[in-house]
Picture: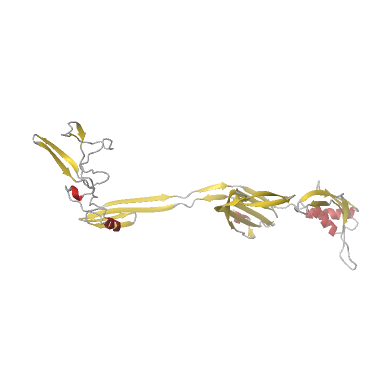
Amino acid sequence: QASVQGAATFLATQGAEVQQVVIETEEIIDPETQRVVRQIERPPEIRAITSEQEDGSQGALLLKGLAVSTDDRLNSISLVGEPRQIEIATSLLKQLDARRRQVAVNVKIIDVNLAGTDAYNASFSFGINDTFVVSDGGAAAVNFGRVNPPSRDNVISGQFPNVEPFDFRAVDGDGDIFFDRQNAPFDNVIEGFNETAGTPSLFARPGFGRNNNPFQPGVTDVQRQDDGNEFEFSLPSLFEYPDKFLLTLQAQITSSNAKILTDPTLVIQEGQEASVKLVQEVLTSVTTDIDLDGGVATRTITPVIEEAGLTLTVNVDRIDDNGFITLSTSPVITAPSGTQEFNSDNAQNEITFLSRRELSSGLVRLTIPQTN
């Protein structure tokens, strides 16, 4: 699992001479736009890498005189030298090429709905003589008398004058006797005869007034006699709440729920990191570039797309021989926090603002029983 370049460099520190192929690339940059317009690869060169021992140095270079060549495609090393040096170099490479440990990390991303509430609601009412008490969902009201007291607006505007029975002049209205309409949404209608018309018509029922004036008296009874007809008028009856004690108790329990969005198992090697993303791309801004070519301006508008959602990164730093795992996690949450429209190049664009929450746990050392 050691890279060929790392192994060759290590042998070079022990005195071996490494022949390395180097290919240089030259980039041609446009001075006006600062963009790379062309790349030129130069002919490959072979360079020797070795360690130089200064005068007076007492360090032993065991592999001095050993030639090493590398092959990046096959990730292999060729050794040329004395058998003893090749044996020493091979044993050193075996120590470098130790397998890295790996660990399986199970990640569960759960969407929890915190709307679970326990709600209790009670309403009651009772009346004593002319006093009526009501509690509706915790809001209480006490009324003394048979009718509700007027508000300030009622007194100022005079919307509700005193009502005198059978006196049409004291009641707002035209003083006409009202009858039920033919298309009224009621089934129980009493029929009678109108003396003047001589054809069946519909009489008004007691307890029901006109829509524009509920205090307008209505016809409740008609008696036909030889010397004339007798009509009986009365005021509409009003609904009154009973004086008995009434109680309503309502209880509502809404339980919360949770949904597993993803449940991957990441196999991470020592010294490597893995990430899980649950994101959606949103437009956060736009960039405008203006190029001047021959006096003509060319404007290029490029949208800037960013990711909104959850990104979790798990980095395994070390796995030792005792079963301890040193790792770190870095969750990042971004969510849209609002939008704004702006005008760019006579075009209406809408961008999205993102709010960001980020946490870095640092290195945490865990053992196998603690990782569940």
